[in-house]
Amino acid sequence: MTTISGFRSQLFRAANEVHELTPLQAQQLLEGAVALIRCMREQTGMEPNTEAPDVTNVLLDIAASVPNRSEREIRNALLESADIIRLLTMILDSLDELGAARDLEGPRTFNRRRSLVELSGIEPLTSCMPCKRSPS
Image (cartoon, rainbow, N blue to C red; front, side):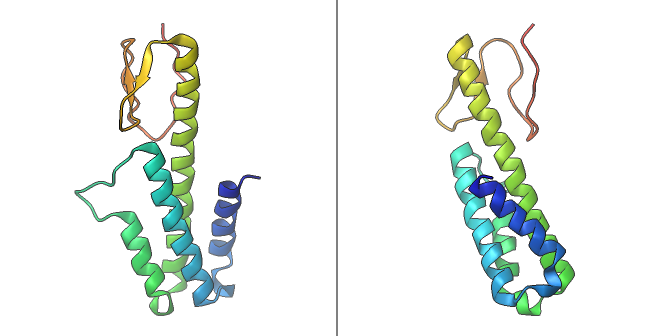
């Protein structure tokens, strides 16, 4: 099990057993999730949506006020952070696969922000779900 998947498992386990967490444990898990999310975002070249509050700031607010939050709010924050990490892992895996395919096929390149630029006429990667389409 990789470190990231192990941490995601910890987040899910903590969400299922939120009644057994101390406020300090919940705070540390949420702060760790925020640090990992920011690091993974940087690796993908993704920037937060400027039209909505950044989810990492929301998660940090919840972490800072864990003693004043309900178990439901803490559970939702833990699950949300685990889901974001899952999606970012999928994006990074897809970018790695596309980079390997680029080395084999040649027509695809990555720009400075590490977003995919398709030169072969296939539309750019626009969702968090990896696309398994083959050029035809």
